[in-house]
Each structure stands twice: as C-alpha cells, then as structure tokens.
Amino acid sequence: MAVLRLLPSLQCFYCRTPQFPFFHLKLSIPNSSPIPTRNCKPFLAENTGMAVPEVDKKLLGELEAMGFPRPRATRALHYSGNAGLEAAIDWIIDHNDDPDIDEMPLVTADINIESPEPLYITEGMKLKAQELRNRARKKKEDEEKKLEREREKERIQSGKQLLETKRILEENERKRNIEFRQAEKEEEKRARERIRRKLEQDKLERRTKLGLPLGQPAPEKPSTPLASEKQNPIRVSSVAKSEHMRECLRSLKRNHKDDDAKVRRAFQTLQIYVGNVAKIPDEEKFRKIRLSNPLFLDRVGSLVGGIEFLELCGFERTEGEEFLYLPRDKVDMATLYSAASHLKNALTNPFFGLLQY
Image 1 (spheres, rainbow, N blue to C red):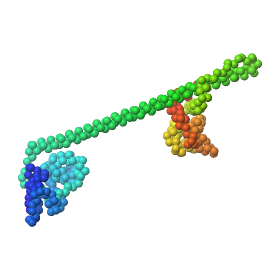
Image 2 (tube, rainbow, N blue to C red; image 1 turned 45 degrees about the horizontal axis):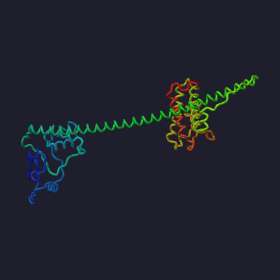
Image 3 (cartoon, helix red, strand yellow; image 1 turned 60 degrees about the vertical axis):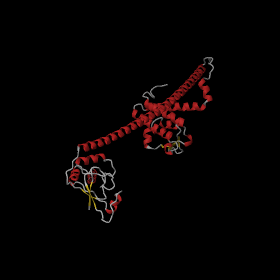
Image 4 (tube, one colour; image 1 turned 90 degrees about the horizontal axis):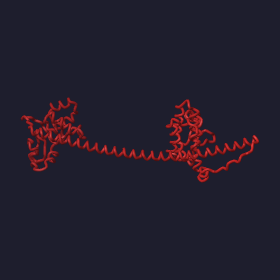
C-alpha cells in the first residue's frame, strides 16, 4: 500500500497534473507492475473501481441540515477539499448552475479523509479565494448587463417597427376617409340636383292643374357630377351603395334611439360579419348566415335596416329564405371596406344618425 500526500504545489506525484490538496490518497499498487512515470490515470482506472469519495461526516451532516441534498453536499465537500463549511457553501454558490450538481461524484481511487495534522489556511489563500469569487461575480454581472442591453435594443427596434406599421395603417385609413368624404359630397350634390328638378316638375304640374300660365322653365344644365356619372358609372354606383349603407345605419339608430346598448350591439355584430368575410373571403362559413339563428335575430335580424345592410354588402337570400349567402365570386372588397368604415364611424361618432341632411 502506497500513500501519496498531495503537496501544496497542487501537482500529482507521478504525472505532475493538478490535484486538490488537503487529503491523503491511498493507492493499491501491485509489486509486479512498474510505477508509471507519466499519465497515471489509465493505471488508476484499470486497478480500481468507481466509488463515492469519503468526506467529512460532520460537515456533510451540517450541510444536509441546512437543506442541501446529499449528492450536492458531497460534491461540494469533495471539490472544495473538505476545507470547511464556508468553502463548501462558496463552491455550491459558484457551481449552482452546473447540470450535474445534484449527481453523486465518483472517483477512481479509494480516498480517505484523515486529519493527523491541523490544517492552517493562510490569509493569502483566503484573499486569493475571495479574488476568484469576485472575478466570477463581476463576469456574471457583466454578462447580465450585456444581455440586458441587447434585450433593450430589441425592444426599441420592435417599438419602432410597431410605430411605423401603425403610422402606415393610419395614413391608409386617412386616405380612404378622404375618398369616402369626397364621394359623399358628390352624391349629395347629385341628390340636391334631383330634388331641384323634382320641385320644378311639381311646380309645373300644379300650375297646369290650376290653369295658370306656364312660365318659361329654365333649361336644365347637366351638372359636372352628372357628366362624371356617365363617364364612370361603376364609381357612381359604388357611391350610391355607400350612401344607402349609411342610411340603413342611420335608420337603425333612429328607430331604436331609446336603446343605445341594443344599437351598439347590432353595429358590433355587423362589423364582425363584414370583417370576417373581408379577412378570409374563401371561408364559406363566414359567408353564410342562418336567418332563424336566435342570436342573429336578437342582434340584427329583428332590427330595421340590419338585413338590408348585409344585402348591400353582397349577401343574398337563398331560395327557401333560410340563409343569407354571399357567393365567393360576388365578394367585393371595396364594398366590404366601405361597410366597415361606416360601421366604425357609427360606433365612434356620438352624433351619427342624429343629424338630418
């Protein structure tokens, strides 16, 4: 039996590799085998088995009493060289994130802890250990600060992208509102012109019935909007449909002006129907509404102007009048966007439907 006492130089007697101090290492060496001069690890692996290292039982009990698992306490005492309770706790703190911290350590030699001589820890050793802990702590703090800076940069970049996306959406919404207002003004001018002509016609008819002489009617001059109506009938039809949608919503609000909650629920339900079709026009379930559905009847179907608004959006009654159905080939995104804009205006404008034109 050969006994190796690890020297303060922290090197193995045979291979000069770094080792832990503060304990004696007993090796069983056959007499017939030569002592290797280099790389003693294969020699130990071939002649001994793996075993749990022996540690200071008193220190192990104190660590377990503090709540540390036995494998973690054993590992801490083993790798801290059984230097003491404080050294073991420091080792646990420094290696708390190790994946194998709760695995029982195994060694290839029979290690017995003996204390034939008192162990003296010099002040220099304490300072060195404290310096190493401070370096490790500072390195960890620097890494955390760097990671936090990177996260802050990512948050700032995400915020900029979100603001830019929001600005683009608001700009597009503003342009659409301007186009809708211009179209509404043109439609109002045409409506006034039609009313004026109707009044002139009624005046002539009354004078004829009363036997009064007919005056010289002023020649009708086609206004500019009428000329543009001939040039662009599709746009005029779209504007007329848009005005009809607004009138449906106004009528719905006027007929139920004493129940604001019901009116608002109807507008929100119509907004959901229109929004679903606009987002996923290929989904048939969004383009088909059962007229006998109690929820639909309560929120939209029983209100004046609700079903008419959906028909203006392109929905059609089936032959048995059981469903409102919007065929895929008749989905008009411009009409849906116009309907969504009117519904949004009806929900956000407190004076919607209260003013007469």
